[in-house]
Image (cartoon, rainbow, N blue to C red; front, side):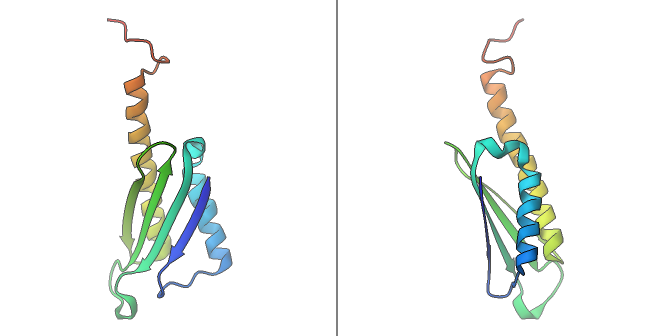
Length: 115
């Protein structure tokens, strides 16, 4: 799984911050690693220099193999909180999506349920 992080012109990440975010994101979705081809994260400052509450935004797009991409976003006062919120939402979305797939296939390997 590849992880890409993009920022707008108002966000400057150090290499250490970028590596930490990649590690946190990889750890959060780790048990889905085999099902994902890549994850793209887009960090932005919604209000730029004007500031304000909840002006940091993290949009994360996960690309599962053979499936449509999943996208979530979260806004918060700091980048760390925006990243954590979006990561949490992504895990929930993937659990829901992959859980539905498992249910459709049958949790017992594809055998029909017993009445």
